[in-house]
Length: 359
Image (tube, rainbow, N blue to C red; front, side, top):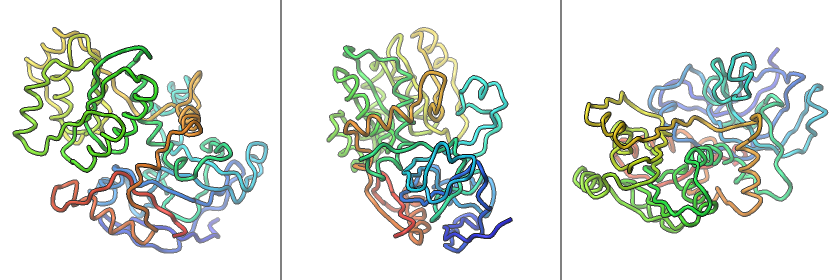
């Protein structure tokens, strides 16, 4: 039975987001009601809200979330209390498939998802399964904790490289968005002897990367891209692809050295075709190509989310990359500007946008 109304930014159709009071389901015994304090706007929200890729309409987006518990379901009372600050793991596993039985929940075959497959956190309140809630340690900034989700994704991608602390290797990161810039910081923190090169078409993002110790490479034109590929053929010991374009997936193979590790992390936008020469290069260089998806949450032996919170408690500041703070009413216009920027129609320089539903 739906009784409560919550002020929400509702994606009614492609390229139309309206703020309205939306009915929500009653709180289930296994859920907690969370007052959303901060919500990150993800690059996937651009295509979901303005590129026609939403699973359904209407939809409340928002999956990078932190907030305060305001009500606790009866079955969750042993785990949480009113007033607890929490971050929210957005993927809801089926708990029945092989991946779930192995506690590889991000690889679930039949999952739900706050902010894409069901309503998420671009709203004042959200009812969340207690399993998806992680308490925020005392003293941590709520904005940093709202960004645990994308930071854990960056951590997961970096850990795929299997680097050693004393290693003096050359690493190339293709894409200087939030995840790429967090990857730079994580590598510098754990593997300070490595040299990190970050590549992007946007000088604004690269300037931020240089502040974190990365060597930057601007590729704003086809010619500069070709020059980069020519100069860096077979150069890097490790490559992380975070752009999601077929040409950058191919480039990751081209710039990888013999016996290199290549991590494909970008959400690819189109089909990728590899020709005979490229496949032969993979074989002859004996490349290790690794896919990465999401992050590990409550795994058998590891949890990227807890490790990320621990890094934040030791000084990592994801919120340093927040370049814009908006309210619910500004989500529509902000996504429109981001969509235009992504399509190279009109420049809009941001790294991370944070939504304050109370703003």
